[in-house]
Image (cartoon, rainbow, N blue to C red):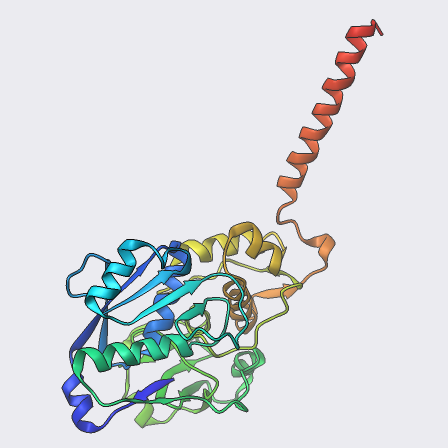
Length: 330
C-alpha cells in the first residue's frame, strides 16, 4: 500500500517527518504498530517516535481504555491533532467507529487514514489518494517461497508493485535487498524472474545476508503477504530463526515455544502475544521450510507447567492423608 502525490507535493515532502506518540500499550504491541505505520506511510516521509509531552506532537495512538482520561483529552483538544484508539481485543470489522483500530485485524485502513490526516494537517497538502489492492488479489501461499529453491536459475529478482524488492541466490543461500528498501517488506503483488544485469546494478553486494533470514524478516515485517495458518494447528520448528531487524524478544519467546512443539492459539494465550503475530511467525517458518505439522500429543509446550501443577496437587493430597493418619493414629 502507498500514497500517490503530485510531483510538487512529493518534492515538498522530501526529508519531512511526522512526530507520533504511541501510549498505553505493551512493547510487543507497540513494535507491531510501528511496523504497520512505517509500512503504510510514504517512503519519503520519516516517522519520529516521541512522547505525549512533545510540544511538536503530530498524532497520537492510544490504548482505547485510556482514551477518556483528562490528560489525553486535553492534548487532543488543545492541539487538535489526529488520533487513533487502539485495542488488542477482537472487534467486528464493520464497526462504526473510524477512530478505533484492533491490532487483531489484518486491515490497516484506520492507520492509513490517520497518516493521511497527519500529513495533510502538518504540510497543508491536498487529499492524497490511497492506493489499495483490489479485493480479489489473494495472499500468497508459503509455497511461493518454497518454490524459489527449485528454479533452474540460481539468481532471481523479486519484484512487487513498487519495484525491485531484492535479488537472491538460492544456491548459495544469499540475498541482497534493493538499495532503497532498508527493511524488507512486500505485499501479494510479489513475483520473481531470472535476475538480469540491470537488476544487479540496483543492489549492493556488500550488504549480503542469509537468504532464509531475509525471507523470514520479509514475511514477519509485512502485513499483507502470506496466508496465515489455522490457530488450532500444532507445529514444531527445526531451528531458531534469526531475524534481521525485527524486535527479537517476542521472536525468541515464540522460538522457545515452538522448538518444543506447540499449538498456535495456546502460545498466543500463554505468552500474551497477539494471535496474528504468532500465525505470521509460523507462516514465516513455513516459507523457509523450518517447521512441520505435529499432533497434539507431540506438543511439549506447557507440559512442564502442567507437571508442576499435578505435582502440587499430589503433594496437597498426600499432606491431607498424612494429617488424617496422624490424627487417628493410623
